[in-house]
Image (cartoon, rainbow, N blue to C red; front, side, top):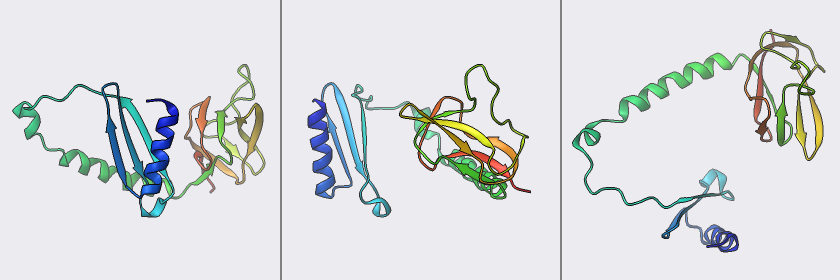
Length: 166
């Protein structure tokens, strides 16, 4: 199956109104999921090599292990982290591109955790289509956390920094 066939399949699934389609051949496995009611126009595509069939019987030890406690533990820690971060201002990426913390490889980073910043200070650079865009702070405060690794791709509106405005 070539790229053109896959694109046509995605378009067909999007128009059909189906919420999920799975296609599996000898060499590939494709799952196409359309968005929920909140996100009607989104189509998600995943392609992965087909895996050999799972054995018919799983060992008894694996079948008896419940997954509930792990999910409950994760849910319990998420609200605490959200409540802690709610007092901070999140600085988000205004564009899609590659995030850089330094003006050049041999220079120091623009800001470190614990640095005090003021409105207009350069926090990072985002490279988009060979243009280097300086991202300036819109708030004054103290850098609490850097949320993106250096030289990582970032999306529009992706959180980059947490700032304590007090």
